[in-house]
Length: 546
Image 1 (cartoon, rainbow, N blue to C red):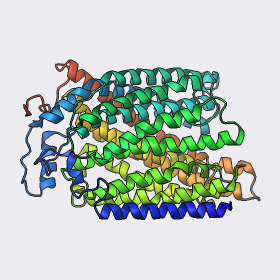
Image 2 (image 1 turned 90 degrees about the vertical axis):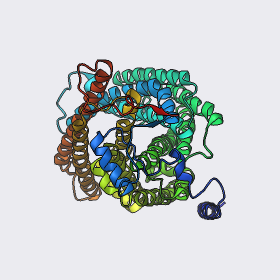
Image 3 (image 1 turned 120 degrees about the vertical axis):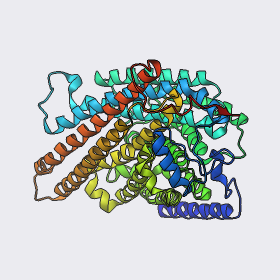
C-alpha cells in the first residue's frame, strides 16, 4: 500500500475520532459532567483553600483571595475521610519520598561534576568511574529512576486514597515495590559506574537488573486495583485516569524495551527512542499532570474550569504520544514513513497541550495573586507553564527544518531539561511541599528555606536553559556551514557550557537546601525539642470531622 495513503488515513481517522469524542462530551457522553471537578472537594468545601506548606497568616491571605471577601472561614477542622486517607499512606509515602530525596542529591552531584568536565576535561581523570561517560549516565539514571520516579510514585500513592475517598489498600505491595526499585537502582548505578551497561540512553542499566524497575513498578500499581472497587466517589477524577494509565504503561514500556536479544541494529535504535520519549510521555508526564490537576484546584479552593477539557487532554495524549520518539532519528537509516509518522504525531501533541494550558489558565483566572502566598502553587504552576513551553518547542523541534539545526547539539539537552526538570521535577517539588506536612503531621520548620529553594532552582534553571539553547543553536549553525572546520562548533560552545555549569551549581544548591529542610522536618517530628516549629501543626490540635 502507498505510504502516503497510510499516513493520510491515520491522520484523518485520528481527527474524526477526536471530533466524535468532543461531540460526545458536548452531548454529555462518557463520564463528562459540568461539576466533575468538584469530586476532589468535600461537601461545602468549594471555596476553602488547602495549603499545608504555608503558615497560618499566609493561609488566611490565600483564603481571602479564594473567596473574594471571606465567605468561608478558615479553620483547622479536617475531614475524617481525608484524615484517614492521609494516615493510611504516611509510612509508604515517607519511604518513597525519603529515598527520592537521597537520589536527588546523588544525581545532582554527579550531574554537576559531569557538566564541569565538558569545559574542564582534565579535571578528575585519574579514575575511570569519574570519567564523563560514566558519571553522566549515573546522573541520568539517578535523577530519572531515583528522584523523579520515586517522588512521582510517592505523590501518586498519597493522592489515590484522597481521590478515591478510601484508605490505602495493599500497602505491603507498595513497600515491596519500593524496596525492589531501590535495590535495582543501587545495583544499576554501581554497574554503570563500573562500565557495565547496555549502551542505550535511558536504558543503560543491564536488563537483568533493570527488570526490578518493571516488577517494582507493577507492584506499586496493585493498591490502585484494590482500592477501585471500594472507591466512595460517583466518578473517577481525571488525576486517577492519569495515575492509573502511568502505572499501567510503565512496566509494559520497560519490559518491551529491555527484552534481551529482541531488538538489534536499526530496530534497536528505533526502540531506544520509542522508549526514551514514551517514558516521558506515558509515565512522567501523566504523573505530573495528575498532580497539577489536583493541587492547583485544592490550593485555591476552586474546581478545574472545564472537566471536559481535562478529559480531552488525557485522551489526546494517549492517542498521539506513542510514536513521537522517532523524530530524534531524522536522517538516520530508518524508514522515512516512520519518521514522517513521528513528525505528524509530534505536531498533533499541540492539542492536549492547548487543552491543558487553557484549562489551567481559566482555573487560575482571578487567583494569580495566590502565588505570593503559596509555595506549592509557585512550584506547580511554574511546572505547568514549562509543560506548555516544552511541548510546543518539542512539536516545532520535530519539524525537519528545525531539527536540521538542533540535532546532535546542546539545544536538545536544554529541551530535555525543559520537560524533565522545568515541568516534572518542579511539579514534584511543589507536591512534596504540600504532602509532607500531612505525612508527618507538622508544618515545615523553616518556611523561608522553601522560598530560597525556589529562588535557587529558578535562577539556575533559567541560566541553564538560556545558555544551552543559545549555544546549541549556534553549534548547529556551525555544523551546517561547510566553510567552517568542525572544531569551531566545539570551541564556540565553551562559554555556554560554563553557563550550564553555573546553572547546575545553583540548582544543586537548591536541591541541598531542599534535602536539608526535608531532614530537618524529620528531626522536628522525632525530637521536637531540637527544632522550633513556627506555628501550630495543621492537624495535631484539630479534631477530625466525622
